Image (cartoon, rainbow, N blue to C red; front, side):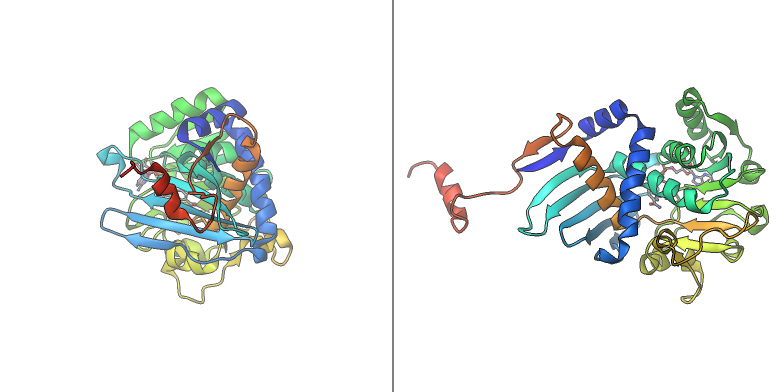
Length: 342
Ligand code: NAD
């Protein structure tokens, strides 16, 4: 049998545990997996592009467990009443190849993206960071805010979105949770005085959400919205201002902000910082840039975390996903057993 967490149970689990506590716990699993980065099979995700958006498969394995996520990215979706990003994911036992765990990942992707951003910022942002500019107030934004409060103690948000209703929604969701929120009048206004800048906009174009003159010394830039060929958020000149950190270089060169740079543009993979092979932030004035696209190992960590957390609870159910004849060679016998006589 395969254990399954559907949307209702995922939401129930996250609400009962509290999203901030889930994000913190997930950061621990992410850190464990980034620290054993070299033991994972890694490949850029497999993407199917259409004029509407992209559908992607994100596989990885640590040779005990195999995992993959199905995810879409359709920036035009909200205008048609659909979400930009939806997902589900699977873990399987490599010894027999059977799927052991299946979970919704639309909510889980927002949690894992936030937890990854938080884990990275904890190592790269200035520890005295308190103010975050949030450019883009869509589905990912509240999760990002919670992760940065957990990782760094960020309590003040300066938010900008071209959609005023999205900013109102963010203020309604996060105000009661104790954030001090300023609705900005532009991206330039939002980043004024910010220690950390998160960009999480969605538009399938080479956008210029921020220009280099807006990035102050010492800022940590958490750029999560540019994650597809032809879909970036930052003026390329920003990438020359500081050190750029990525998840998995071959995928980020295709999908990240650095697709705007030459193929030999120097970047640091974040696992190397955790491992001590590469420095993280070296001075308080340094600008650090996390060019995040989302990588399969993060989904693997998130699924592993949920699987372990809900084991033995009623947040998961067993489903009959794999046909299992008593004689492993007699698959047809299962059909025969149900066929009407004659
Ligand atoms: P969403 O559609 O819910 O929200 C995006 C917001 O950006 C919208 O409110 C929109 O009005 C705003 N926006 C668009 N253009 C803007 C501009 N020029 N200036 C200011 N605001 C602007 O999308 P989402 O689910 O929050 O995802 C945001 C982005 O993050 C998407 O591009 C998605 O693909 C990406 N993403 C990345 C990761 C990762 O791991 N790096 C994970 C999940 C999502």
